[in-house]
Length: 112
Image 1: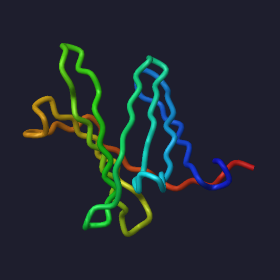
Image 2: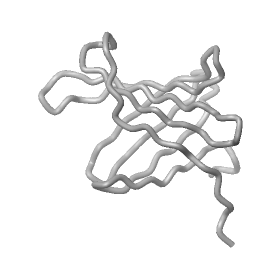
Image 3: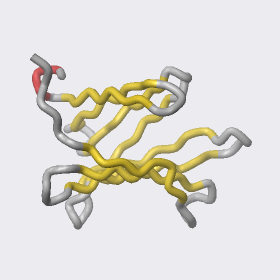
Image 4: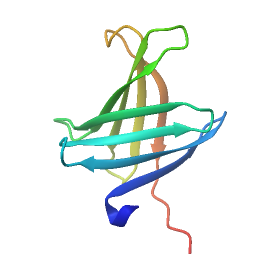
C-alpha cells in the first residue's frame, strides 16, 4: 500500500477479523506495526531486525486484570520462502514469555 511504503495485512482469528499496517519509519529508524481487531483490540509495536535476521517488534497492551502486558512478535524467514510468526506475551515485565500465536505465512498469488 502507499506506493510500496506500507504493508497491509488482513487476518482472521477464531473470534474476529482484523488488520495491521506495517511500515518503516525513517524518522524513528524502526519498523512500526499498528494492529486492530474488530473486537476493539488495538496494539502498536516497534522494532527491527535482530542479529539472526529475524524481525522482532514489541509493544505494550493493557491486561484484562489490570496492569500491562508486553507483546513480542518475531518473524523468522525460512529457506523455502515461508515466514514463521511467533507472538509471545509477558505479564511479568519480560522475565517469562508465553506463546499466544505461532503461525506460518505462505506466499500466495495475487487475485486477478
